[in-house]
Image 1 (spheres, one colour):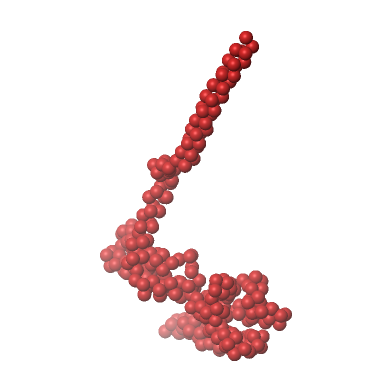
Image 2: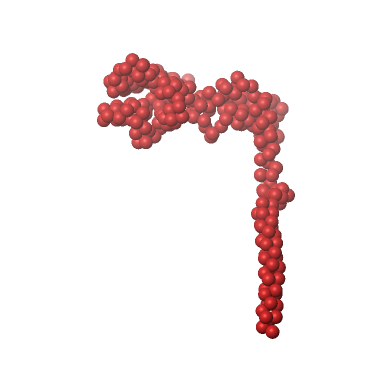
Length: 303
């Protein structure tokens, strides 16, 4: 009897084990399939579009498409000239040549429309409306170019003011025993300004594989400054001829300070001539009125 019971239990356990293992294996496979398809489900574009805002769904794609079409219209020569001017101006507002032309075009369209709308509201005559239209178009064409010129001049003036102090620090670092690249890196970490920004670009270009001569000469394309151009030329020549860099920088610093002193003296010499026009136009007539006014009133009273 015990033999039959044990045999029955053995068969029951064997059957249960076989069935259980198979069902467990199927369940494991099903879990893996389900996990894969749930986690790697292809994105539903309709749901994604519903989650995006109106600007991301409609405005941004239209702007990108318009920008591409405008890029194709813009010629390579005009784009290169604009890019050169924007680099010299320090890339104001991060504008690219295409962005600058688009801003200029929007001003050419927007300012006349605004001027005409104000003219209609003020009920101006047709002649005044045409005058406003011409002034708005001229302003939209001239103002962006003048803005770039002013930015270029401002960067050039800032570079001339910053350069002597930067050269002093560079000379001290070289005298302390550092190489030119290490000294330039130290100066860049201690100072700020337009020249420092360009020297940062020089160090990055040298790390990327450019030679020192190429990296320094590239500054002349991004920053308009006679003092800086002369400094770069002297540094390149000193490296080429094996002249001591410290003596070159000292002489260059003295020359730049002397040049700044001469420019200040020249500006002081021009001041009386510039003051003559407001004196003649505004101050002298007032003095004549004050001095000769009472005499003229007496003469008119006597007659």
